[in-house]
Image (cartoon, rainbow, N blue to C red):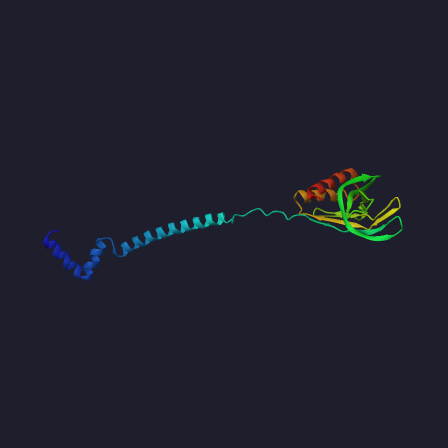
Length: 209
């Protein structure tokens, strides 16, 4: 730069008006500020986008992704097997235990539940408890079966069991719910007993009873 031009530039910087003009010439001033703000906004938007992507990844790692809710487990309630046992000496004792259902079957044209008692009664192995279809009912969410009462006379050993109630509930729409629907449709007596037995035994298999 020529010495005369440098001196003129120095004088201009001393004057506020000239200084503003010089800044405008250099592209700073209001326009330069606007350019700077736009640049900062771009940087901040990029940072926000990166932060959001990081949060989404962290949310997925923590298992935050929406999962399909699982159906609640079925609920099985089997009432106690209670009654009396009269031995060959005609001594009667109360009995309370559990009837373990092995399978359902048809005997003499009637639906029965085959199983054993816990604790076992000496001399009594597997027993067949009749299913009272008139008192049993069901829907797509619950099955209510009434078994017994039962009276046995085994060579002088008399066993009496009171009514046993089996209630099974499940979520409608899944495999168990569909099975309960099918069973409920046969409990009114219109369906074949053999078909009902097949469905009940499928139900036992699914529940591991």
